Length: 417
Ligand code: SR1
Ligand code: MG
Image 1: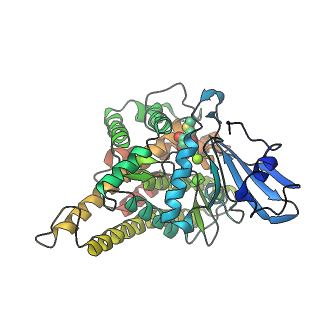
Image 2: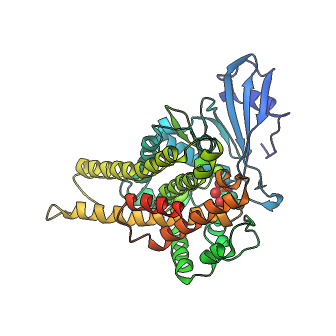
Image 3: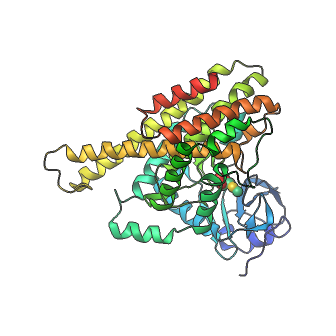
């Protein structure tokens, strides 16, 4: 079938022609179709049988351009192939945190999958000040399982290299290389920012050699370190949650890249949420302290639980095999010494990626709604200055922090100024 854009008008007949949909819809005559995509790239439709609302799916289609800009910005629609492959791989490793796929088509660049109708986009829920007690546990499990089981620590050397070769995602990586790792720091014409943001705050990330060197190193790591199949865009808009369950969606940026990119993205977005909530909680007439404390406790738990689970999987696997990555452990302590050194380096990488992910959301093209929608531009600038400072500290100091507690303290200190 040749590619064509699916629309509200054509979706029912498309679904009716799919054998996989026969088990989902008792009839295709009275479908409610709503386009709900609010991301930067794709179109997303919720399709529900009006006669039986339990019969419902999501249809997501990648179009051959960047939605946030329009048809003037071509972008391969084959990004959907990477998204589907990653959803399948992640779903096999972590079925409780990845939505089921019912049908996919490379020709049409679309996927039909479970409608998570009892879950909401995490970013929007955090903006409202909602609490998710199980989220850090779930997301740390997702990251530990997916990153460990797609890495050289688990896969055979040949299997891993073949998998990495199949996941080369040139155009989507280029978006990250440009919009996350280059443009915000070079005064690029695509940058957009709050007119109330003080010039010296922007200069501090664009005209300081130590920061530019740190970002250069982080960019080089992103482009060269094929460690594991990463999600590649694990911000709070790529997560859907309710009080009991958490799902990771939208892995179109996935490729074999540095492991720290996923925990870094998540931590960056939790810290941005934290910085936005001084204003947001006050605007809702609440004392900001309890919710901000909760966001920092989640940030801490994301890392500590991820680290413990990743190490647990690794130790169990080495025990099961009776072998370790470094070869024979002649003294009985060397394998663990390597694991500890590995996690220390992974923590530093995570902080570096968290730093650049924070800064790009303030100065670059793509924003985070929790900060960008603060209506008072001076209030917004206060959160943005803190985000730029924190991002810069994380990027420059990434190898020198003692642990996630120090990051939490730094965030608290910077946002108090
Ligand atoms: C043009 S930048 C678009 C951004 O949206 C996605 O969610 C990624 O973060 C990407 O960098
Ligand atoms: Mg996305």
